[in-house]
Length: 120
View 1 (tube, rainbow, N blue to C red):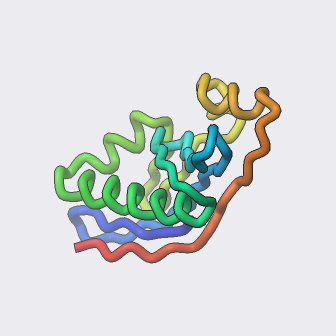
View 2: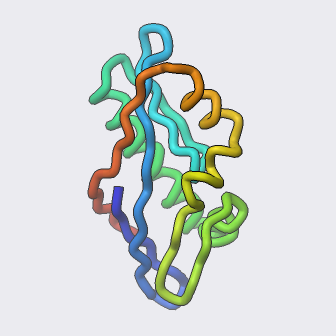
């Protein structure tokens, strides 16, 4: 997912977000290891929609509280003057949740989709 965020100097940052969809019982789980966000839905499309909503709420809450960049850094993101970069996949594989998913044999799909989030 590609989106933008605006800081207190009204600069815009473009960044990519990746998440994974996999089945767990009768639910589809959407998991984003670079932010430790997850949601679920009854179907693949429900899980994707729920993730978009969860991600938007995360961004809006962090921006409203002035904690977006601190939270991203705490999750291992690199921030420069104009870019935000998620941690490398090899780094994310150290997280037990992602390592378990990859090593479990469960089929999953990586999602990288464009999105536009209005920042107030």
